[in-house]
Each structure stands twice: as C-alpha cells, then as structure tokens.
Length: 477
Image 1 (cartoon, helix red, strand yellow):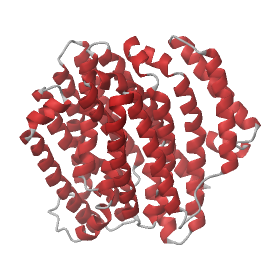
Image 2 (cartoon, helix red, strand yellow):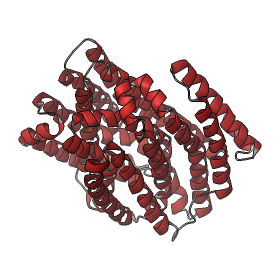
Image 3 (tube, one colour):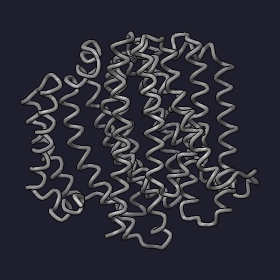
Image 4 (cartoon, helix red, strand yellow):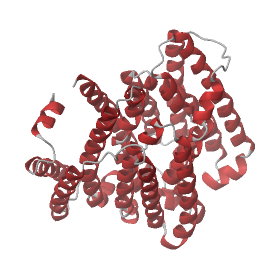
C-alpha cells in the first residue's frame, strides 16, 4: 500500500502543478484578447505552437530515453556520462535548428507571424532554451525528484506569463510581450544548470552509451513530431488558409478543451519511471495493477470534465475572452475535450509497448496519424472552417488509440475496468443534464453551477459504487 500511496501523492503533486500551468495560460487569455486584436492573439498562439514543436525535433527523444535508461541507475559516474552525452547532442541540434530559423526568417515570419521579424528572432532564441530546459527538467523526472520537477515547470510558465501580462497591460507591442516568454525560459535554465552542475559536477562527455540510447530514442521522434502535428499543426493550416484572426477564434476554445490533458501529465510522467522496476522483475501483475488504477481514475476525472467543459464552453469563453471569440469558437471545445480523453487513454495504454521496447510501433502509428492529420486538415479547413480542424484532431486521437490498443493487447490485457467505466459515463450524463438545464451565464453563476455539478457527479458515482468507500478514504488520507 505504501507504493500506491507514494504513487498517488506524486500523481497529486504533478496534477496540481499541471493545473497551475494550465491556469496560467487561461489567465493570460483575457489579458491578451482584451488588449490586442484577434490577429495579434493569433500571432501569440503561433509563437507558443512553434516553441512547442522545436523541442520535439531537436531533442531526438532523449529526455524520455534518459528516464528509461537512468531511472534505475545508481552509479554516479554512469549517470554523469550518459546525461552529459545526451545533453551535448541536444545542445548541438537545438543550436542548429535555431540558426535555421534565422536563415529562413522571411518565409517563416510571413507564414506564421504576419511578417513580424522581431517575433521570429525572439522565438528562435526561446526555442533553444525550451529544448535545453526539457532535457534539464527531465533529469529531475528521471530520479523522481517530483517536487523540483514541478517547481521548475511552474516557474518556467509563471515567470513568462507574469512578465508578459505586465507588458501587455502597459501597452507594449506584441513582440515585447513575447519577450516575457524568453525571460521565463532563460531564468529557469540558469537555475537548473547551477543545481544539476552542483550535484553531478561538470564533465566532457565520451559518448560511451550514446549508440544504444539513440537506437531507443530515434523511433520516438516520429511519435513526438506527429503528436505535435495532431495537437498543434491545425493552427498552422488555419493560419495559412483562413488567416491569423481565425487562429485567434480557434485557440482559446482549443486551450479550454486541452485543459483535460493536464490530468494525463502525472500518469505520463510517473508511469514510465515506476513501471520498469516491476516489469524487469517479471511482476506483470503489479504492472497491470498500476495501469488499471491509472486508467480508472483518469477516466473518473476526465469524462465528467469533458461533459462539463463542453456544455459550459460558450459561458466560459464569454468570461475569459471576448463575445466575438466566444460566438465564433465555442463549438470547438466539445471536439477537443473528447479528443483529449482519447489521447489520455492512449497515453496510459502505450506504456505497455514502451515496456516491451516496441517504440518502432509507436513511431509508425504517429507517422500515419500525423500524415492523416495534415491531409484531413487541408481538406476540411477550407470547407468546414475551424470546426473541421477540431473534428480532425478528435478522429486522429481515436485512430492512435485504436491501433495502439490492438498492438498492446498482444502483450498485456488492456487496462480497463469496464463496470467502472459504465458507471462513470452514467454519472457524468446525469451531471450533464443538470448543467444543460442550468445554462449559466456570468462568472458567479458558472462557478455555482460547477460546484453543484461536481457534487452531483461524485454523489451519483458514490451511490452506484463507481468508486468504493475504501478508495475514497485512501485518497482522502
């Protein structure tokens, strides 16, 4: 029970951290949408989309490789050698990609940032530090230093948001506001370098194990890039076909629905670090138990959240953005919410293939899904508009889960408790009827409706024994 208790406590810590990070993005939406044009907000969305893309390419899948290869390592010399070898590769690739942004600055700036060169320069520099920070933060994840991991994620997000908010509220230009992001990444980079360097010391890498590490990592690159393609490339397609204003309508609704992915983050972070120990020892029952509990509680939280966010989408967007954005974008949220649920199911199930070191299968799945996403978006966006982009995202997440589930079941039973799932859906449906009847408007009425809806959902779930009393008491402790 102590193992589960530690696991749940870490899940809670990372969950709270991701909640705070998600809220930081939502907090900034009303500030930027009410102080800039919809087109400028579209540029801001493209900035964040680009900064999210580049680490998926430049890091070669090495942050995750570090977790898989070093989480059970105790020899400090081996840790130092592998860590600095991987960091050196990421440094070189990140620098090269940032330089390429400068070389091809004109077409990139025209396509993504309405020709704003200053924004492109800032994005190029910020992207370099985003790549390096992902590697450094992964060091704390690898050795399950979850408090430090969570702290640095929060700092990286909030330093940038607070500074960007200050600049936006004081009437500075969009490129100056984007500088706030750079400061956040740079500050956290300096702190982590000093902390890790103080612990490990500094060393020149000899790349002893790099070949084996890259053989594991390289197949995950298509996975990472294609995952980004499915999650974010729709903004590029919308920008190209419909312009920055359409991206501005789309992004707040997409951000609202994507909040559900924060519930996946703790499981995606901790399961790869926890499961290998039991898997290597041949304790598959323990592996399956962790996966089933993770899936059950992920769905218990995200299914009602998806229902609630979908029904409250227009009301919430009226509060955090402008009426223009809310009326043009509120139908996006339900598709994104449902897509996030399927992405979460995939994110827990894929641990089976990762444990079996079948990362090539995951790479092929995401290459397929990424290609389909681009093709479907190019077809759908010009005819259906931004709703078409959100529908394509949902379809691609469903495809990714179905193919992953098909391959995973060859090695382990899929981690579903079907009775619990049915009870969760019933409870969420009853809660959804209440929210639909209430149809609140205004921040006070929305908050009251949310609180009552949560009480109704968990009340029904408890009555029909979707969650048992002993489980409730365990989480309370």
